[in-house]
Image 1 (tube, one colour):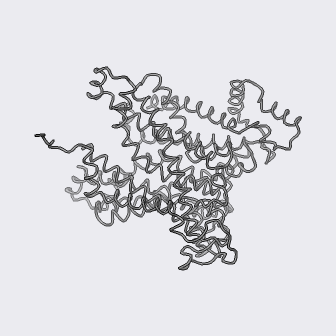
Image 2: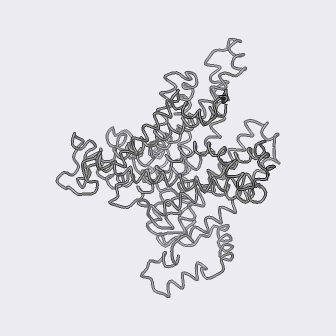
Length: 286
Length: 312
């Protein structure tokens, strides 16, 4: 007969935490899932073509047919907001995923190996952090040329330092723990210790940060598109939609309300997940 | 104390050097020939050759960097092709309005954040606390360009309360003109302030000296202003310096939305005119502002709490 361990392992606490308490996480995950589903099944959610012109129906106020009204070219704002989620969520996802992978690996190496690797990485991090995030993104995209690909290059080139800082600090603390010393005495290679033993325990704070980073990236992506540096017309992208219709604001305020609200909702949902994850990580540590 | 200050200033030197390298390499990111990019594709080969020579593009990279650094230290960033004027003169002339906007924003943000943080800390875990946190999380989610447009519409067009464009005619008029852009920026950074201050105020409220003060019969008002507020204001400095880059990013957007001729709107404007030297200098100035803010923040912290310097 096997013996059931008295305390639950972290693996088992996770689903239990999802069921008990932690409203923030549950609300955030459900909200985010709904937004992602709406983006994937956009043709089912909205009944209008997001780019087809319909000038006879230009600048119509919100109604049952057009819940967010129509823009200056007669396009249904709600449909464009739903299709826009595809672009803006992609900006958030790529803007988080690439720096998260790159930054974690570099931070892991710096924290675990120490020495000159750590010194060099530390200096580079200090330098990049000295630049205001948005300013450096704008400067890099201004040089490379407008477009989403160049936006991703800029985001990756800058944001990795934020993940490096977090993972480095964790790795630095973990490498002195008994289980790591034991692994080393067993003759495991450095790569195996770094990726199999340290990384899984060092990555949680990086994931918590990734949530607020996601919201920041969506905002930065929308801001650059607003300035003409990100997505290009006629792409339905929230920042670009606001830029295109801004001059119609006086006669048809609804044209800029819809896309902006979308950004707010995504940011809110993601920060709820972030808050929930932070509680979760603290709970496991306790 | 003096040794601490000197050390702290010395520590920024490698970062300053690194910043100059990044700014130097920015122009290298331009696909193709920077001289052609500056002049446009219809420029004659002779003109391109002259500009290449002027920019020193045919020299080895390290010589180009040293020349750039030497010129930068003397404030020489070349001539702006668009303004037909010294890049340094054009950019520096726009710095005061940017700094004024940022200063005004910090004051407004503190004015908004302190009472709410106080209320949230005093009613911790209750409905008021949750409502305040939700409200400010929404504030954090609003992109500055959007909240700027919406508030400009509401305050400027709908209610006709505040001017929405330009810097005004100096003095009080300028402050009136800067109120709306500062308010927009304050809304975007006050959530971060509220979050930090809420926990620091809660900590002070639970501290022994506040309990002692209560036991001694000090009035709640006296306790709030004399002890709690003073001791919880210190995190404001930390939060503002840590998020100074975020504040600058917002300022760039707000200047553009509210037609303020600051360094931020110059940066945005120079992208379409392909004034690469201006983009370089504006980026450099903003990075220097961050470094300076961190330095001042650290020093202020020591002034407020001399124990910090002793520990180092």
